Length: 285
Image 1: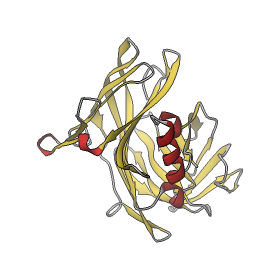
Image 2: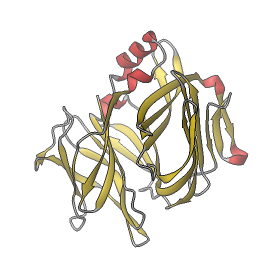
Image 3: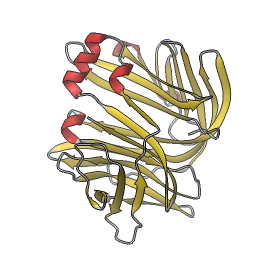
């Protein structure tokens, strides 16, 4: 999230595409950058994967994507694509609050495994961002996590919430999944006065009733397993909505992904809460 009000999201994933095998996917979404909003995705053969353990970096051969140095201050992310116009990002965390992981970070969901690691719950970032020929110096705050599962996402979570806050001294950051029957899982980091603690979701409510994850909510209240932790309440009014399938390169590939995973929709926004401003993403099928 940039200091000029724009928002940028970058995802990197390995995924299985029916009839094509494993592929690397990256996507880049930018909202309100000089009044413009765009998203783009790329898919690559795993043959283009490059790992350099000496620099703690992974990249895609050709310079389209790079993550360099371990998560924390100094961690760098680069994304470049020339698809329906040029898109470019090169930012580095200049500071970072240490991530916290509960145990091994693995949750058991109906007999399946879900791994969640909040590596950077909050950090300051600085670098360059560009659309077309318009490239500018930027600064702001960033969040970084890592997720994996041993089953198709649609089989484990009907909705997935990602939470972060721009304020440095006191913030909430993490990821919460909601199963088909409305059971929440995952965790959030609550950081106050230099101390971070892990809290687990106890319930997710809409209009003070158990949230039905079959549809996107209009408002949410998250209560925590620690009864002394203040519930997080916010209006889920989206600033940005799109289907991740629109970022796939070809008709056949889009349909293969839709068949394997379902159509993944994203809604993103910023809401005012009693704890401060909250940047949120709600993803679902």
